[in-house]
Length: 76
Image (cartoon, rainbow, N blue to C red):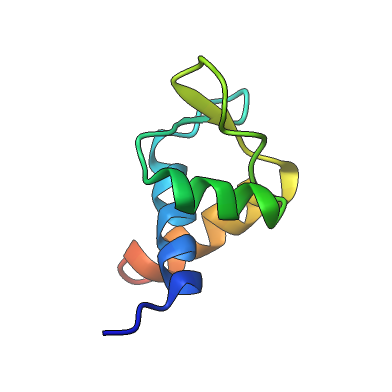
């Protein structure tokens, strides 16, 4: 079975929006390979640190909200 890593990355980015706080941080309880790819794509800061959260970039915040709304919101 071939896995679409871009779709996985987009889903994780959308789910990061669920725990996003006012400082642009979200809990990083996702697969490290996915977090590394999101970092390489410029959506999050470096996930390799002692913090239990990761900082989303401005682009990452905007993209995570857009994806969250597309994937999980009902109606308008």
